Length: 449
Image (cartoon, rainbow, N blue to C red; front, side):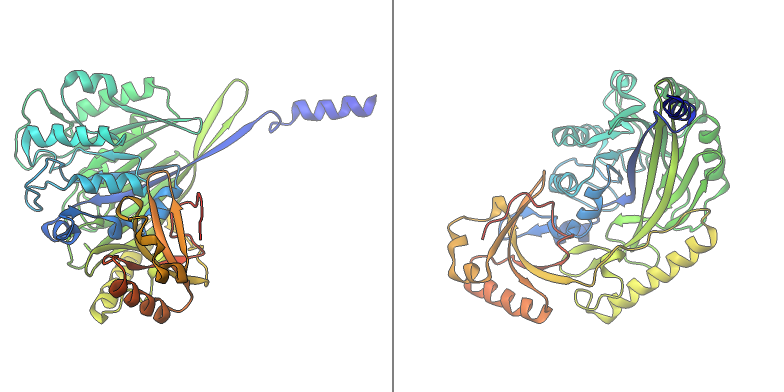
């Protein structure tokens, strides 16, 4: 009896007893842009359609692995004619691929929000709504803003409040009744007061700010970040400079500021602008019967670089640093090395408590040949003896399904197989896909041989 009472005493007095700990992984990426060169590369003259699958093929497994993935949509989806700089309108196929690749939330308040005026703003929102992609920053009217802002996001028992502002719209006035959130400290204070009333586990502010192509934040960025933190924000994420800027984690105050993530995808090729960073922020919530407390548990970044070849392809460093198989051209390899050197020098010197994520890669590199997505593949053609020889695999995610053939440990053998497939089967757009322990493929749902 005394032993039982003793166990009960320690169980009741133990502060851990009765607690529930949950985690939420957030992934933030930089500017999503479409210059003329990007749009041209995505166009397939045979099908007369736009295809962005090659661009996001290697970024998608990373984007999908986070509980919530955020990006800055720095363009409009205003319909044809499609155009890059200076007034962007990208094909809807881009938004479809963003959804397939794993994006959950896009912010839309930036200096290109009004590139196609009212039509562009409203059509962009319609396209995102049709894809069930959450968004905030621009609104059809004041009623929509009052009912949906700050945006409340729920996932795995967490609730987040998201706000988004831009310094301007390139001088283009907003057409009533549309609203673009402009940086106004009075307005930001009012909105953050409303965010606090939502009693979310964390408040996130996405800012479109700073000076283009400058690697360090200016005083205005610092003042705005400090204001957001004073008014209750936990995370302040920045965009617009198109180059990397430092990241700082104040552990004692439970606050993170990322001044600029650079370009996630764009047609910009000059030094510093041809890549960006992806920032992982893990939240941890400890709950008891009466209270819960959410803290920032980890903050890490990883680098990605955009290769211009036949397509513009996002090359995460965890898979492609030092690669000589897919990044063959000496000038491209040197550009990738230079981006890595510049990024690590900047972030290594100026980051506070934010380190580069250690890759969890494998030496078990395999290659397969991607035939196409399920919608593009005729089942009759799958009976081709050559494809049957190499064997077929069907891989599915929640958003897409693709057919693959072959499994090669030698890239030269994969190339030989690709030549055969391109010349002897109808699959003229087949391409070699690198996979590391199948990590680069969508989550596997079924497999047929």
